[in-house]
Length: 193
Length: 193
DNA sequence: GTCTATAGTGCGATAGAC
DNA sequence: GTCTATCGCACTATAGAC
Image (cartoon, rainbow over the protein chains, first blue to last red):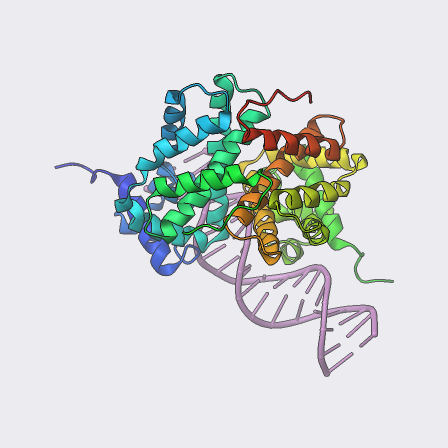
């Protein structure tokens, strides 16, 4: 017999997503979430800094991007390195995960405060990737431009992944191609997705 | 004799920036800001949706970017149109404005909640620019890629503008050039800035 | 686990401009 | 009278201090 049920964090995260999705973020109190997880308000805040963070914590995918970048072969073009890292990390989001990601994204899209937090996470990812590029000898501002561009392509790809049934890898490849065509003289053709 | 002093909004904004800068954002209460402006807490929230918004409200520069884009000549390359709009709006930030912008940015950089709000404003700018591009006939995903790329260059340029004594226009031109070189085969040389 | 400050909301009252 | 800006008060929930 254990004193507390294990996986308190996970129970809080599930309860929060469920309640945010059914009643709305603003209408859900931390007390409700904690109660649904069989815990107290105080415990919620011991695990998550604030009411938003419960939807974002425990996302190891930033580290995954960094690891992929570390393994990318040296290239004269930093954008190619970033593209390799991002497409390499695409298996972090297999199609089985799409229903859960869709629910989560619906909740986030419905609330500006949650959108803010998501933007902060993306900005943090870009900062980390830029630092990693600099560590591989890429000078500024190329490192930051490449890292931010990569995160941009990832963001739009992720959105398409949720909106369609295509694989994330496919979408990323196409969007990196479109991104490359941006600076070419001619306008790129519209996407088929 | 007037019942209220005019420019309540502006007084609240000045008081807030001053107090955030001197005591820190977290350590400043809305009641303090309101009192410094000769008003009450309730009035603060009538003008600003939350404690952060007081630093971001009344920024007409988004409209300025949109207006510049409307005036940009039609071009086969959406990135060129965006670059024209952004460099065209650079006079919105003349060098005289730099000291104030530096103080404001110092406050924002010191607090993650304020960083979040700034990211949301930049995301909103990108969304608006993408919509304007679509209105000019640019298809997706090119419109969003170009708009987001332009906002990226603007963000980095603004940062450099604060960190140096160079004009914003100069910096933007150089960064757009560096951005174009990103997708070229060879690595770009480091900035001189 | 308890206590407290404060952000933020809802509703109503007041008072001037018109 | 209407409109608008401000204030007052009661209230809840978040978040942090102890």
